[in-house]
Length: 70
Image (cartoon, rainbow, N blue to C red; front, top):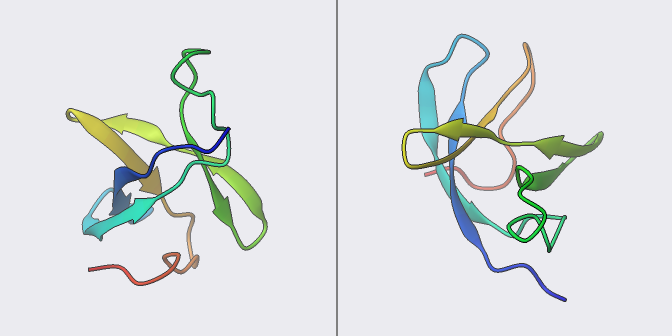
């Protein structure tokens, strides 16, 4: 099963908004299992966190945003 793309807000370690991107979660059944979506990163998968009505990926200190962030 292939996960549908979701809109994700990219946050700095301090919580500042850096941009948004559309990504496919690595855990395709995250909605059915009532889990947070996970995204592929350089060092493995990372869990997203709730942010307003959607999801956000909070970067760790010194970490660069994945892909092309708008």
